[in-house]
Image (cartoon, rainbow, N blue to C red):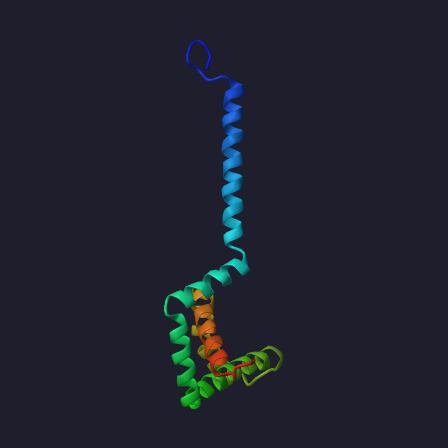
Length: 137
């Protein structure tokens, strides 16, 4: 500080550089915690420590004891994927296309407005498929 109590420009520049350095290190730490591998590790640790393993075990047992509902889910998803592929390349009857478009609009709306919820549903389906698969050694 100079005689009248104001900070010198050099002191201000030094404080700015210190703040910038602190912000850079904070941002780097945040970036490290948000990498896909780190997020996967955090998710797996959460599942292991919060009863997720018991849930997955119970889910796997349910799928193995009653495979029909899981099969129906898989068939439904396959049907949706095939239908989407057909809709991209083929021309259809205009009155039938109108019905298909009306049926698809809620799914498109969910995809646009709630992509995270759709991702959670996809994760659940993946868990179901993984639980139904036989264990490898």
